[in-house]
Length: 395
Image 1 (tube, rainbow, N blue to C red):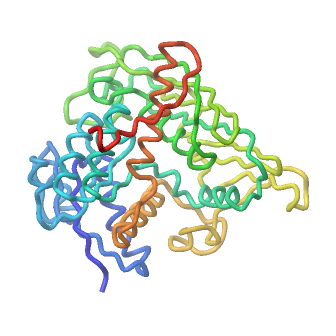
Image 2: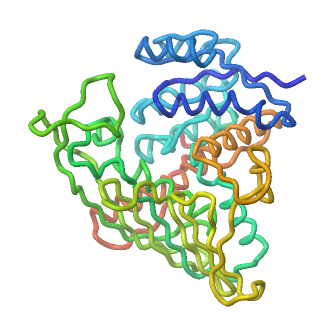
Image 3: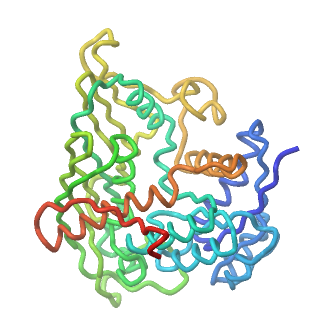
């Protein structure tokens, strides 16, 4: 019989709904895993979202008080997709209740909050997960395998970026993502965190950075509370408010193993729409991948290829997890398919009682790099990456 795992989701906007669809899809795409997620309860501040969760997604119950959800005896996993400013309180309450926790990135609203959340989960000995989902793209998993096998030789260069379209419209609404008091940092937390995590996942720890930031769109139309998403827009002449966190971050980075690299993130740039991308070079080869072309990998392994130059590798069932969605080669996956893989691997870790990666510890490693970048904005010089991990004996 499949193993039933009771799940409660806090926050049922777009990402909360994506998580719910992912849990519901696991038995359909991965029946061999023997996992049957049970959507026990949802918590949200908007009654209409609760109704949607119960009527359309099959949640057994819904509530506006997240505390009741955390205390629910039949919930084993707390999944947090609420705004960033709430993450710390929610996660620490879940840890105190002995629940396993999945939290969307960047986990804490600021790196120091991530450190407190990681400590709470470590002391409670609960399994945690962080939503750095791009790790789970089958072709990214393949790049990681090639690195581990030494097929690129000694890594020398890495270039990572996340250029997103959601803030390029100057009439895009002033949602919580553009407000430091609600989102914390801007792109440093929102999308640069993905680029940092991917860089460290593939190349190892970053040890030193120098960074700059900019706000290119300084005013935005005010939204109507409870309506729309950060993809919607206002009209010329609408009342506006001030953007209080950064649109752009760029950095030079040095890795512990000697790799040199660059990282960039921008939400207001024209051209790229969702370019979470990487390029890496080694002494024997190179690779390039971009989320906008999720199912294509540019690969250069001259000792193994019949021609000297990049070749295009198409995703297919030869790569991890992909055959569960569609057989054969050249058939595509999408964003939410990757979220299904993420949810599957998280619940498999809970079933096995083992650490999931990326977890709050990995999120803290990303946050430690982000904190060094933020220090560099102030000092205008290179900054060492200092781990923000809190020693349990000192807490």
